[in-house]
Length: 264
Image 1 (spheres, rainbow, N blue to C red):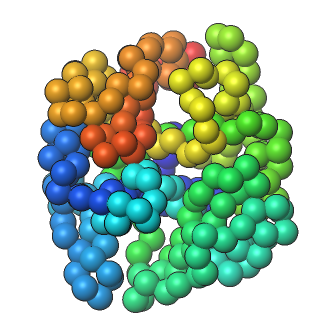
Image 2 (cartoon, rainbow, N blue to C red):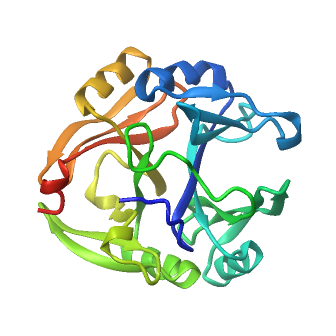
């Protein structure tokens, strides 16, 4: 699962965009206990979701015709500009050029070779999220892609990710971790689109940890969200479900198996 070592290539941040943050902030408050902290003018109004005074995610208001509501993952890099060049050399592209965010760090928006957007973060004063691998925090990620081999080759060339194959019901699950990392640094899976009829386009899916998957799904439904996949239990992993908020941004929730049962 994720950790706060924030190794190069690991997820360090996640944020969502929607035309009206006020319309979805109550939804996330009910699900995760997040409180929306409105951003100041010097950061372009960029807001944060806080959990007991700690940052769990970012949030940005966008115009309705600017982009579809979505969640975006940020991966750590020691040099944003070099990573942007590596992305282009590997067949990807840039959404926007690298930019400094005050003294907090430097970022760029990129697109992989299958058209999936993601961002990169070069830390300054801000290393990453405060809430990880605990209820209300980012706990896992998945990339849905038309070609797993091509995707792992792309991200391997850009970040040096290493992969591990695990046998799961119905096939093999490809997991990724930063170069030089171990099993404790696994942060995500790479999933073929064809294996999941509920998915129709390539994208990064963030998972947030919860204490009770079924109760969270019920709250999501009551709050105007969409239950894209009902809760499913997987031995050694936990119970998880796929959701979308009232604006349409996709995410998932995971109730992990007890520590002694994980990986079994």
